Length: 454
Image (cartoon, rainbow, N blue to C red; front, side, top):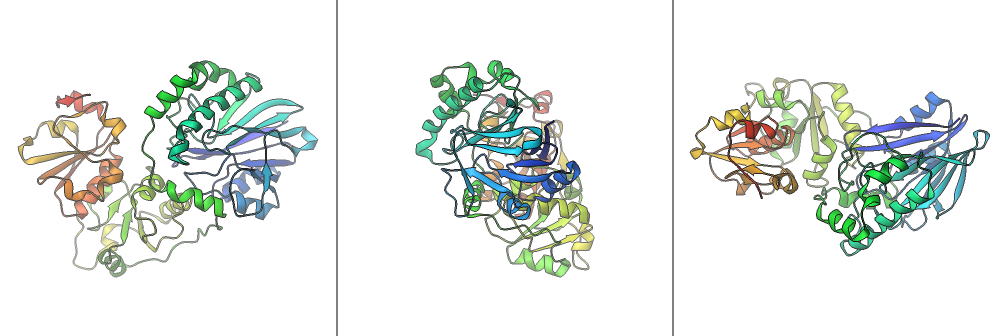
């Protein structure tokens, strides 16, 4: 009997998988912190005989090379992917015996579109396709975006994505379970998935790649693409070159004097605590990226690549979890860290900085003559409606555009509060008077704030 275990990477919006039979298994698109995969195999009592990549990833650093090295597994990578390390090149139609005793095999299916070399893998039991690992090809209700490789290839890859989806739909039984890597919040998805599970049959009726003609599909797909996180530029080369093993040992602890010195040197000091706790009191000059939010995505997107980062956390556990998140996107070793509260992180005689939080109702009650409303949502979000007269700078651009924020007290908002907290911390560190609107954007209408659409 075959099994499939899902390894959820919630912060990045991805999934990896361990699948196999009674004694051996394959790891699909493993994360860089491979201890999770090894633990899953240990719980199952199976040996990892194969590690496969659906493509060279653009949104996270893979653990595939290291996992194959440690386990002695065969490392299967699409043949056309340009890599600098030894691997087993995989071409369309290639098969691998995953667990011969259980009749579990894997077949490679060329599915270009997300990347030119993208490959899906159908898991068979006794010759029957039961699962297909679709990586960034066919997702739940959508497909992986085609614009991450080379702008001149985007339309060509979009058309290939349509063809690949149709090939999967025609070659596999309707009951085949579809298990993608992307689509659960990852910016590698062309749209966010609806639901947690699907099959080939369900996708035939729900996925636009399978319900509209290719020209309509391509036009709509390209029109709906989101901005690409800046750190993606570094992920592909890291994966093609062969990522180094991770080091998750605790970073060196910093005292108040060292934290102050690192801030004075222009380094980033990142407070991982909740946005409520940060607003109530924090080290002046530090930035707030909540550990429970999309820490890896937004910190890696916004920090100048390679700049040293010091992490401030409530607890050692919160720090360790954040460190694990960050290695997945190539931020390998914090320069330093500290746990506790702001009073532990400040020199004697210094008091924590703070700023107020409010709601859209609170904003509606203000005299807007002396304040600035700053919207830090993405362009696609703002296009559906914005507060009339508000200034728009997307969160990922704000650090380099602080000088464009007009004078006055800044009321900053996003769609739910997390990104507004990041923005408020940047503005506060820059010496601005700021109020963080910690509220859902739907409440702006309820509060009676004037909205513009178009």
